[in-house]
Length: 122
Image 1 (cartoon, rainbow, N blue to C red):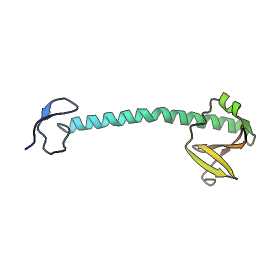
Image 2 (cartoon, rainbow, N blue to C red):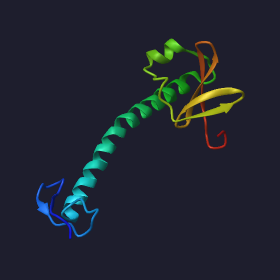
Image 3 (tube, rainbow, N blue to C red):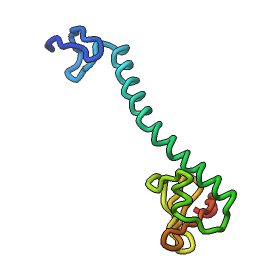
């Protein structure tokens, strides 16, 4: 026989039907799981927003300066965050940090080039 224990969601005492039962019912369990999922979503939303901003910066610079070397200062002035990228690709012996389909590769010290990577380049 199991002993009564409090539900972590509503704080009411209940008699569990199983040894590992945590919540008094489906409503409390669902409410708690949804709260956890919402918190996790809010945590990643900020990062996702910053990644998309980086992509937009690269897209705008690529449209203006396609094939031209760009300085670190120019990228920082455009509010590019070098620490945020989605993956790494190597093309023509240059290591690119990609922000979705736009990649930034260091050509020389403090000089970068931006490339658009479609599916055939990856």
